[in-house]
Length: 84
Image 1 (tube, rainbow, N blue to C red):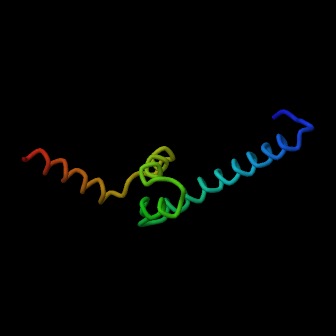
Image 2 (cartoon, rainbow, N blue to C red):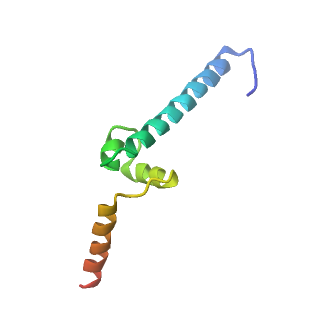
Image 3 (spheres, rainbow, N blue to C red):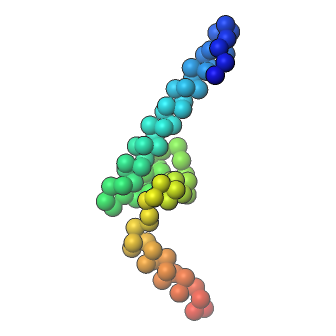
């Protein structure tokens, strides 16, 4: 990071640091919530600034797999769709 005597640039740098720390805290908190038994990514997303799709992708990226019952429902939907 470049140091400067400009107070506006210094303020932006400080705000960026706070933003980065807040985002990291949000990520850790969301992962902790997603690891709870019965956690629903949609409900967790509703309490965050992220979309449900982003929360699900973030979960998969961090090794949190979908609920097994969801996989069963998704598989049965594919089967139902192909029988038309």
